[in-house]
Image (cartoon, rainbow, N blue to C red):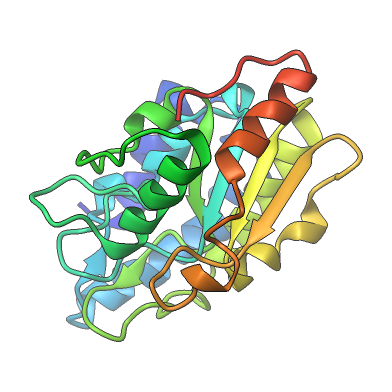
Amino acid sequence: MSCKTALAAFLASEGARGWRELPVFSAAGAAARACAAVDAERLAGHVVAPAPERVFAALALTPLDTVRAVILGQDPYPTPGHANGLAFSYVGPPPLPRSLVNIYKERAEDLAEPASLDGDLTRWAKQGVLLLNTALTVREGASKAGSHLSLGWGAVTDAVIAAVSRQQPHVAFLLWGNPAQAKRGLIDESRHLVIASAHPSPLSARRGFFGSKPFSRANAWLEGQGEKPIAW
C-alpha cells in the first residue's frame, strides 16, 4: 500500500469525519503532497515508518468532534518496528521505547499509579486524546529522527491543531518538545489549556518533562470545564 492509497482509505472512513472537510485533505492539498513525498522516499529505497496503513491512525481513531486532549510530539519512532501511527504508542515485545518508559514514569509520579508494561495507547485515543506528531512519518534507522520534519507534514498538522482549537470547546494541549511547542500560536489559549514541557526522550526528559504533572493538570482543568477526566 502507498501513502496515497492509505490517505484515500482514511478519508473514506468514519474516523475521518471532521478531518476530511479541512482543505489540507483535498485532492491537491498538503496531505496529498506529503504522501507523494513519502511514496517517493520509498521508491528511492528508504524504509519509512509507520506502515502506510498506520500513517493516519491517530486521526482515524480520534475524529475531530471527539477530541478532548492533544498530546503532540515530534515524529514517529525511527527504531524499526516501533512506530504504529499513534504518537508515543508501541505495540510489540519488551522493552518499551525509552520515551514511553519516561511517560509512564511521570504518570506514576503524577497519579500514583504503577508503570504499565503495555505500550499500546489506543485506550487514550478512544477517550478523545489525539496522539499526534508534528510529522506523521520518518525514515527508519538510527539517527533518522526528524528526517521527515521538512517533508510537508507541517502544513497538515498545523491545520489539524488549528481545527481542534477552532471547533472544540475545551481541549488540553500537551506540547512535548520544541517542534511541538512551535505550534503553540495555533491554539486559542483563552479557551484551551496548554501544558508545554521538554520532550520525554531520555535526552531531554530531565530538562522539564519530569515533574511537569501533565496528566493531573489536564484532568483538573477538564473537570473544571465540566468535562469528564481521562483515564490515563
